Image 1: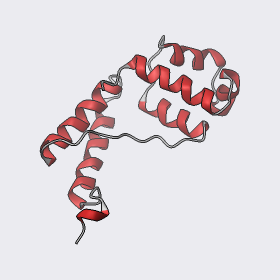
Image 2 (image 1 turned 90 degrees about the horizontal axis):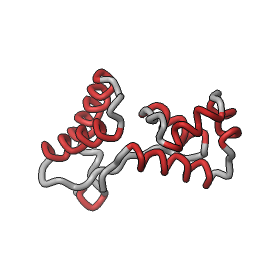
Image 3 (image 1 turned 120 degrees about the vertical axis):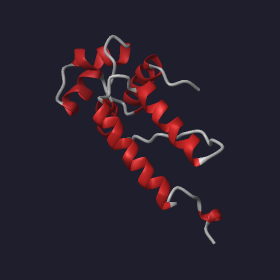
Length: 119
């Protein structure tokens, strides 16, 4: 599935509605105007990585990203970076590099393996 700005806008609206919040109520929790909420939900303004993270938190959710299983660790890392860039094209390069550095550490640690892979 491709993550597009339209998909993100739709999910933001669904998350707010699932939390039982109006646009005004969510805006109050985020310190934003109702129009700011509307612009992100309608796709008129693209949500940033930070917007999505704070939105989820304000709606009682945890923001998580799941990536498809590639054939190798190198492929996995490349796919993660590409998905981040596509999902948030306006994320500055320093932020992308910080996230990718964390992903490298996580992948190198082996913590991403499930219990069935641990001897």
